[in-house]
Image (cartoon, rainbow, N blue to C red):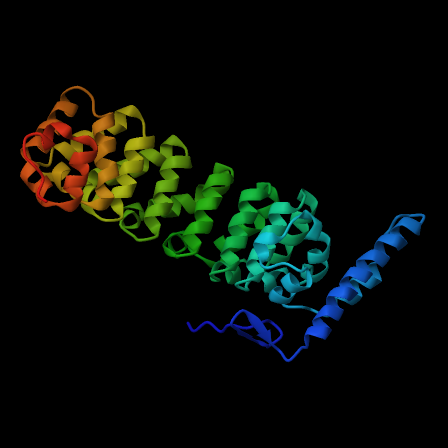
Length: 348
């Protein structure tokens, strides 16, 4: 896809400025209008017996529909990182009714996220509810998917349940796990949603867990399941890894899953996985020679007990030549196997 840089009102962005032909005087006038309107609203609120704000005036300001970049300039800020709680009221005037538009924009998505981080629960719900009915579109956006993730992180599950419901209506859980942005949203759901809400999608994922362990994005979902899901789910994943231990120990992506399985499964399952790796001669050494296998190798040495630990050290000592010939094998030796390093000097 070719990304077009520009503001939402069709103007072009050139070297960080808006090439819209609007003079500096007009920009200053717009900023002055915003300041004067804010002051008048505060005065009228103080004088009003009910304390209500002048809503028609806010709507009048909102009809200008400034782009996200223009919002930052109107507030006198350099970028979205400078937004603070004092800017919330002004931002909401421009954003309400346009949250989806802002979320889909490279700059606007940061404005939405800043508002969510600074706002109270009521304002957060007001913002997030505008994403309802547009979850699939947001999921496919490199910008709006971050808004979905933050909403799941910050709001109560009941307030963002619509995200899960819409995803399950339009995307198969396995396809979601393989999606570059969908896998992130799914991880946030696994972290924060009640297990009973995720029972069906996780059941679908478990049916394809072996290939997902080796998928560039799916493996992160499986790792999250090992870290956050109930013991029964973990045991299903451990069983799948055990049946294909060769790939689990040496595949670039699957090594991370093995590391999490050795970290979060029961002690019995940890010993089973260690024994399975050690039963294949040379597999532990091959795992230690891979960048993504270093963490799993160290983890296995930590969890292996008694004779299994002795066997692990013996296999690594026997494979010292192969370890020294490998860049990552040498890193493993220098980081955690001094007894092997002492038997053979690493290559320069």
